[in-house]
Image (cartoon, rainbow, N blue to C red; front, side):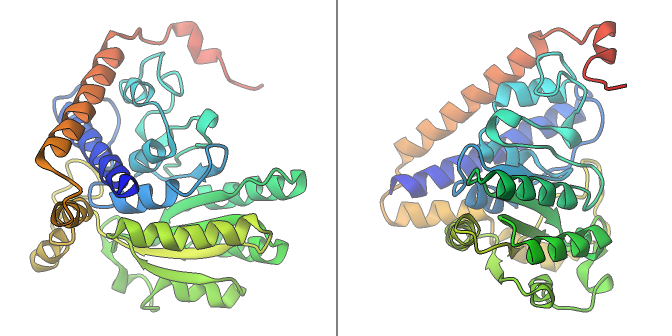
Length: 315
């Protein structure tokens, strides 16, 4: 019961964070670009709930959900989006390059597929140091066509590294339908070519994602090597905030909206009598308070000083 409520709370927390960030961005308060993960919350929560605090994750330009689920402080996240000195990256990273080594978040990456080979490096370090850590790297369907993806999986396989490759197949490589950029009907089939386990999972069902990820984590932590997980999911918004999504089929979109991972779990929990109106109201109030406090912290934080431009730079 408590675990199901935890999944629900964490998915709602990510959804509300994204909604607030979008609102602030549209008001012109946040610099840069914003890529929302609304619709994909079950993947982030399902995967990260299985990991230990010191396990590593690498994410993408659409990574707010992943890093929140892994344990990043929301105040430091909003401060980073505001480019303030109290941000997780001192205001230098922004939405697409957010990280926090204290909880194993080793960075988002704005370059498609670029985090995959870096993740193989951390997995190799864990193997060499025997530190029992597992590395997870998230990427989209478009990244599965890059050389970095194939070379990285091959290395991880032959070196038997403790890494899990998680492909969030949200059906669009930016704006290109998956049927137009690859012939295989399921990305997970590519695991066969490298001799590693590959599992296709309903990425809109958080409990299914938890189960599949648990098996993959145990597989990696017990020295049995990498796995590829393809999470079948859907981003409800465009590639970036402001994208008019003219390339999307309205009927397909309506079908996926009915699979909203938060709504589906909410209905199930209410049927079981686990999620009452009082509990739901309490969860929403707590999350909204956390978000409001985080935004206030970010707004009240100082801007980086000119001298900060030269810090954390190696010559």
